[in-house]
Image (cartoon, rainbow, N blue to C red; front, top):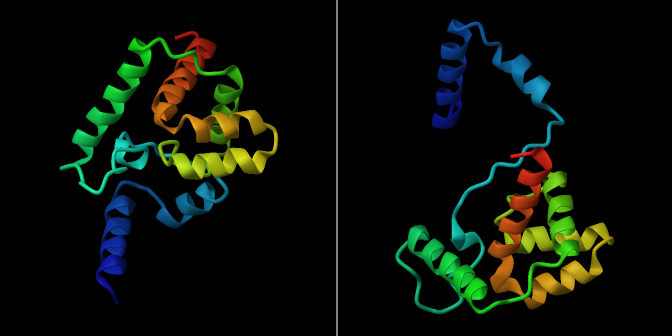
Length: 144
């Protein structure tokens, strides 16, 4: 038996001590779509040059710096269709939303947002800004 299986079996025993039936929990989770987001900008950009940045925190500074630069330069707002498309991709729970290429594939496969797909390809450096716009819309819809 491998280490992973041993550790899993040990964890099941610990959870059982607290009254948790791990096998039943896994059955209940079957079919549940779950999207876990991480805040690493290297999934979005920052490695476009041959020189690798020291780490994801440095990459995030580059990505956020680019976003701030776009805002300062007076770029047009993110189109509503792009935000709609990002929200639709998010609802599928098929990918981490910071995995830009995977999200763009999801949107493309939806066939409802052709202009959004083109905008995202043409404006890949504004992806984080588009994600922020989606977050702002979600917050507004929730009354936050």
